[in-house]
Length: 179
Ligand code: APR
Figure 1 (cartoon, rainbow, N blue to C red):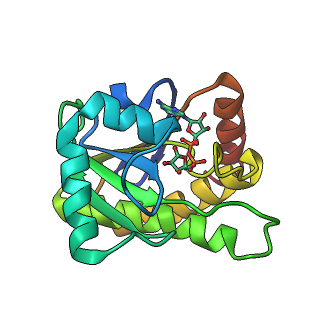
Figure 2 (tube, rainbow, N blue to C red; figure 1 turned 60 degrees about the vertical axis):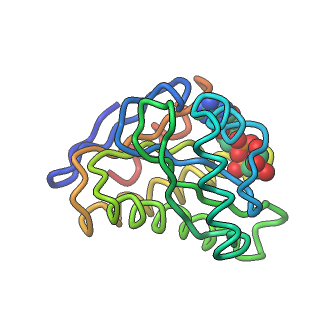
């Protein structure tokens, strides 16, 4: 599925984010930036030790990364030149600012990637795995925020990479509603 938003192509794909040939991929990290399971584990495994070394430097300098913020490291052995690490909210009941924090992840990741000169970026479905954000609600935040932010930047392509067919269908429905 594909949409044109001004000069930017918005694209949905199903697959493994570590295989995406874009300038920057986004990692659904945790505040320690020391790796984990899910997308985080896959990215560190595929990208190699350069990524963790850069994360350690960032944490030594700036401390733990709060939820909703984003930082950039090199992509190591990945096809992507950069990894944007962001920390999604842990979902509890939806009344603790989870949507605002998740929106901030997408906004800050786009801004951080634009700042290093990335012209294409690929997002996973942040917070909908270990952090248990309901996928329908998360997709709506992801798509609405991204579509609203795209005109502020100069990306040729913004991509969402969904692991499962079901998640892909949920994001398709969310895009059909807003774009
Ligand atoms: N490519 C694309 N999507 C993937 C991949 C992959 N290689 N691996 C997992 N996913 C999907 C999951 O199916 C889920 O839909 O990414 C989505 C996000 O799941 P998580 O990776 O669990 O991320 P999140 O819910 O934000 O939890 C973050 O998990 O691994 C830890 O260190 C991480 O503590 C942090 C927490």
